[in-house]
Image 1 (cartoon, rainbow, N blue to C red):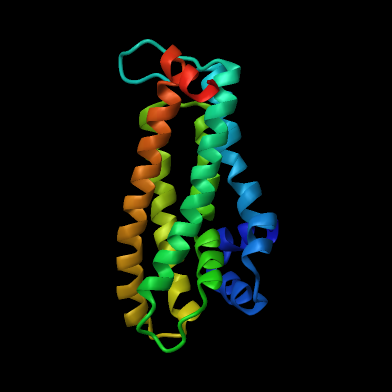
Image 2: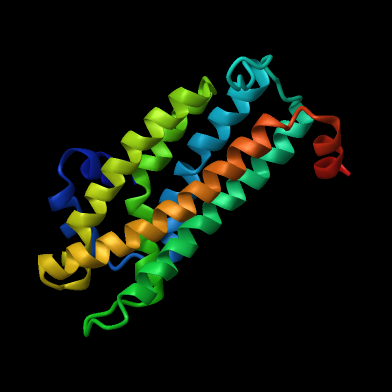
Length: 203
């Protein structure tokens, strides 16, 4: 898992070729990559919101209590895991007109590795300052787009021109999914200290 992470950051073209030859299953992907990498934003958000707290503009810093943070973190974690599966299915649907269309499981594996920069960017949540999170998130999104553009042609065995078109469509949908996830994340963690929200999650 660590080798693929480093490879996607330092030598993405060669790493995609390696990943494509492995025939990895969704179960293996989640067990050795997604479940671990998704912990980065969740654990960092847990620490940042309980020890430092969200600061939204000029508003007072809002910390989240430990019990509420645990419940919110669990929901955040599940949303991330679901987002990978959703994007895998998006890639599968987008590729339906190509003769070498891979299975939906292979598309989920591809989506899991494409999301690697976004997982790593979750470390910024240790200091949950909104503008900083947005800045780092944009940088991570740009590199994610780069991985997508590099990986799609070889993954689907299609010309680079077709890969660019497919990648652009996939990226557009991916951005919408990401924005929805980020909006839910900011909303959930920023209001987590509210008694009503805490009661909702904790019963």
